[in-house]
Length: 141
Image (cartoon, rainbow, N blue to C red; front, side, top):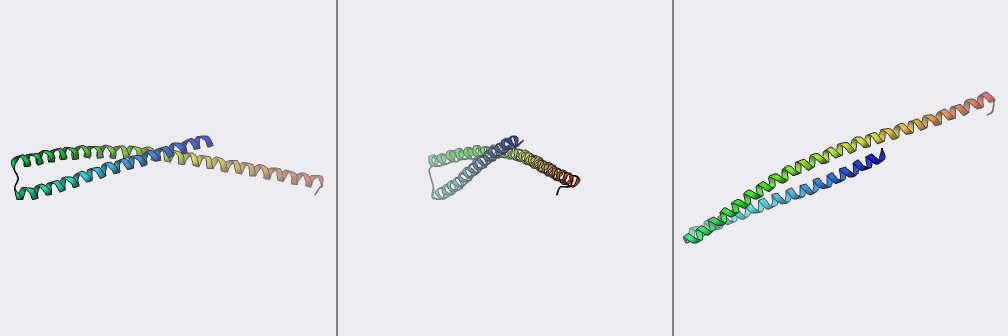
């Protein structure tokens, strides 16, 4: 039973590590999305300032093309964030499941250990009682 509990503990630790890696990956995807949004906002602000000063049609078209590519990158990164969030949820559930399993096995091991100790104590008490009874019957003290 102890071997099974040790394997469950190892499995739970692996699941916890996978969850942590998933958390880090999700955080990284979110940070990248935030950076893209910030860059887009800065770029739009810069475009507004340059637009007030006047620009030729070619330059305006280049800005709009770049802004379109930036929007596509934001959309793609948003999809990455959503996928990493789903993966995070799955790895969290796996870890929680493994944790509950390990906890149940630990509880079972503890119960078995307590039963073993109680049985040993009961046997020792019985042996002591029998020795005392034997001494009393034989008159030896």
